Structures are given as structure tokens and as C-alpha cells.
Length: 192
Image (cartoon, rainbow, N blue to C red; front, side):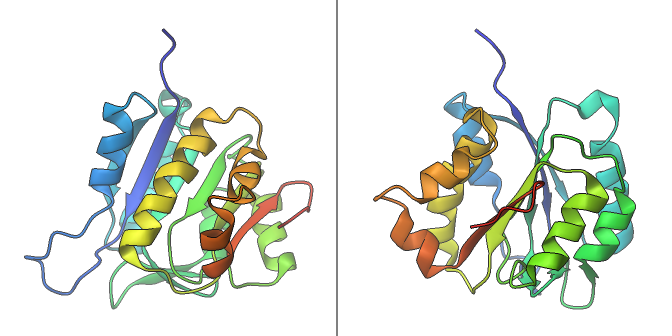
């Protein structure tokens, strides 16, 4: 049996209270136990930590981890690592310039993809990634966890780069995708 594909997850600090335990880790563990994915999960609280783990992800050693999952708070074109640290999509793209051939990005972050098509196409052009997807609106934690379970599985195991698009257009998932403004942009400029 072939090894399942890989997800490299970058997770920010969700709460100011460090005793809180909210995390996407149970979602990743569920998919791994079902033998749908393999994953690497790293907490990132500063732009420097995020950049360090992005650089590690892009090494040959982790080339089987084709999906980058950004599990952070967000606002249009920005990822929030903590309440006091954020980083823009353009800066992230510059860190990975030309190194993401064939990779797929999932931004499990509120509103990050509420950006112009030009901005998102530029991110893909700069990184050379195959596609990106995520939300244009605020999302509910529980609903988005269910949704990202099927999205991540499709991104890793769907084969074609448009497998997520086929999933979110299905009668089962289309209403939730539409409700949260789920958006997909491809390297060729096409978007949903």
C-alpha cells in the first residue's frame, strides 16, 4: 500500500490564554488514523518561526508534503500568528519565491482570501504553487473543522489539482463553501 500524501501544518496561537487547548491537531490526527494523510504540525507564534518552518518545509527532505495548511487567525491578505504578530501574503510569497512548484496551499483562516484576484494570482506566480484555497469570510470553528477534514483529504488524495473544486461544488458541501466564501485560485489564473 502506497504511503498517503503529506500535509505540513503551520498553526498560530489561537487564544491569549495559554491554558486553552484549541488546535487543528485532532483534525490532522483523525485523517492520519484513517490513513488518509501523513502530517507535520508546527506551532508558529512569530514571523521568524513561520519563516523558519516554511524554509524547512521547502527542503527536499519534506518534498512528499505537498499541501501547506495555514491554521491561523486571519484578515484580508494577512495571517495573524498571535494578537501582536501578523504577516502578509506578499511577504510569505517572497520568502518562498520560486520554490513551491506543484504545492497546494490551504488557508484555514478567516477572511485571508478576501483579496483581489491580482493579489492572489501574484502570490501563486511568485511562489510557483499550483493552487491556493481558503475563506473570504469569518468561519465557525466546529463547522470549519468538519469542512477542512474533507478539503484536506481531497487536496492530498484527490489526484487532480481541481479535486477540491469538484468537492466544494458537490450538493453536500456547496452550501457551506458558499456560506464561508470558500475560494480557490489556480496557477493558470482561473478561480472560483
